[in-house]
Image (cartoon, rainbow, N blue to C red):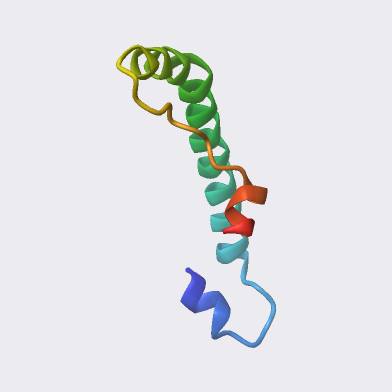
Length: 68
């Protein structure tokens, strides 16, 4: 899809716009799943890691990522 949009000089087609809506919904669903994992499973996993004297898993923020 990116190649078709990137190399096309005109306005996006209706098919491309429809696909964009689908991709946005898929991304929102994936983000919701990720947030659920972070809020539920990551805490217990980090507790186990700390008990084993291992570093916990830290979620990398955009700011920290940009700073690297």
